Image 1 (cartoon, one colour):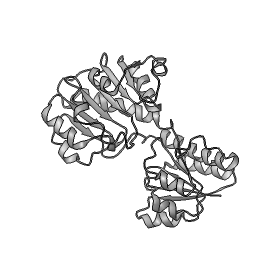
Image 2: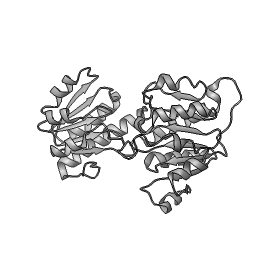
Image 3: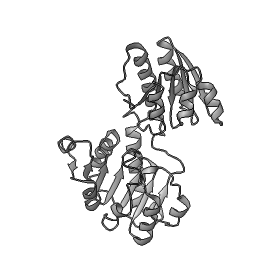
Image 4: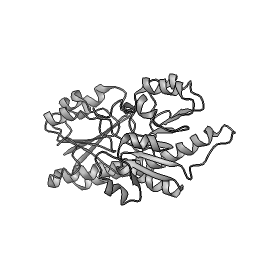
Length: 305
């Protein structure tokens, strides 16, 4: 089988070497397309691929339709909103992600950003500490659980809400489970977002919700850009000079958010999974999942069931 690694933003060399070792040991051929600058290059590369590994690359309907031999596509990472799941299903292509491989990297970045924020972006003025602050985690998956683990080390009080995770499961980890998303925003000093971008969550972080935060609240987003209702959050930041917004995903309206100097920060590009360890882990996990699929029909991580 031909396995294509298609990455506009390449894996680390060690990750590619690890992927190659896994794929070739299973008797498959590996083809690598890196730093492509035109979609036509991707369309050409995928036309005879049996499997494909991507990062943040867009596997839309055009790409999937062009891949006549494609049987499985794996997103090396947790989020998979860059795969057109309907197109994959229509073409009988299994779509998978690699949950958990980037989770520690994203969680560590949360606290790098939070320390930067509470210390007033290192502007020389007195800031505050994270110890004793109440941290709210919205979605208690792999990243959320790692955020909770690190927060405990900072001496923070940790709460979480997840519509799909039972309260008793959350509380077994030592985290207080609240009853609703509203309650999380109402009671916490800081809210960290870890929800996926779905039809239900897109734009859900809006004026009414964030306005429930207590004075001096901090909203941090290392999840997906689309969950933020940008016009409404801009309006709220204009009205409430006590709030801060920190994000690892540059908003579409970045230039407007930038007007709130001292209360807004974005990384130049998404940095959550940008560690050598996460890069290698996710890439090799993707290769192993493809091998398991071809050997045993394993679809444990399928997201388009």
